[in-house]
Image (cartoon, rainbow, N blue to C red; front, side, top):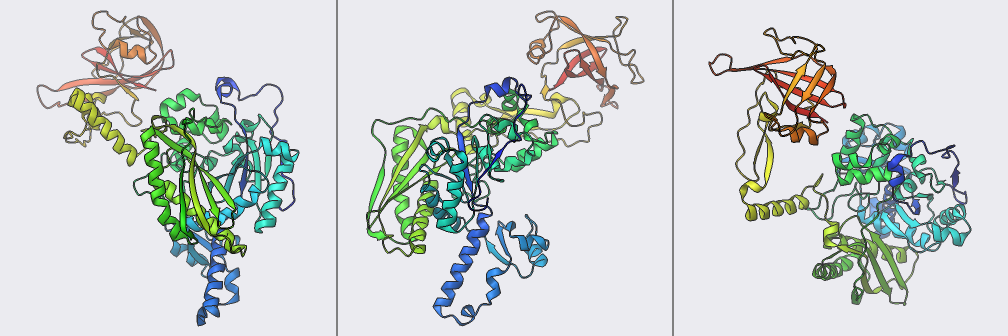
Length: 602
């Protein structure tokens, strides 16, 4: 949004009559608060250009001959930012000549030889972004840094004070432009996700219309979802080598696209309970965001004595390396206080006092527990930002004499534990310790894990073995007659007997020529507890009623399985896929004229 221009009110998101996407899930979505997202577009590029300019001035001031005589066109050369050996950002000049996001360095330099290629510097981006946060602070307090380049803040109170949300957005844009010289865009909507997407075009989504606004967006917009470690700080390397991401957004988006889900509206229309059951809590949180809601944190705990870790710095802090030296013991002390109380911190306030008596503070939010390494990073970034701000303003009183850490939001340690789905690293270690504890209490067979071994029958393809025991040797096959993928989601270890009949009531069998004796019309499921009805309970638990006849809606061609036909003990069977009246797809197995249910497609 250009300076002084008011944010556009999104008038296209109104629908007449009842909400078409409503339904039970829409009604169940938790109410979202009004959130303002402040975004500085292409922030890594701006930070890289500022760093290049600072280095050029430093070289010129040092009197280095070649550096001092650097060509003037260097400042206007195209800039390409690399992150983990791939192009993460490129300016318009580089993109115009063929540089693409995701390119390797060699390909980018071949497409644009005159480009200045720099590595992403998270610490510099975070420190420099403090200038933007301080500018927004002059308009409204309570700013939370989401990641370098993006701020989140509650919009309701500041908008009421400023006379409306459009006036608030205009004031923020003007403040950032006047105090930093950079252009910012502001998006306001219900919930953080809708606000982030609205900030792309500087829109204000009307209250209650976030789901309608999100619906037409492509499913790839989930890349901007504020979830995971660091609230969407996903494209940055973890501070701790053992820490891993809770959920890989790229993999989730690819999976949803392969399932035919193209837009956020398609995703939001799925039943919330089904999404949580199939994909786990991380994707369920994405589903909540796509419905226009926001995650509701567990009930925060407020200790009787407020927690604070403070240090008086002598000599005063004037360099970033001093901040890193002071941050480690403060982070460990805070971590010890939290562990002793069984709590974790998800929002942390960092306070500083300068030699001139100026008090500064900034709040960082995090999805999950802030580890000591997380706290150290944020102290270092924040102090670097304050020091940089004082230096750019030419202030001589930027020396920090006191640092303090105050947990803003505390949760019970159990409620902040990451889910096992989609987790690795530290989460896998916690799961391993829990499994070992269960085996120690209840025996080795208490924890069984599936291992794919191969076979023609579904029950033979996967074996359950004790956790950390020797794995059985895999039998790669080939296995003629085995089911192609996707395999049934439910495999019955005790296949229940059923009867397949034709329209005349005669039993359907498979002939010697691998043909059905007649088209199947009815599948009879015996009552639970009757003779030969072992395994019926498992069938009933997956939506197939017992003690009744189910009409066969469709069926495939039988597949004959000849097992060890060259030996006297060889067996012959036939497999048939059917769809019965409740809409359930079953895999039947026929042996010696008797049909059993081998698996169920979900």
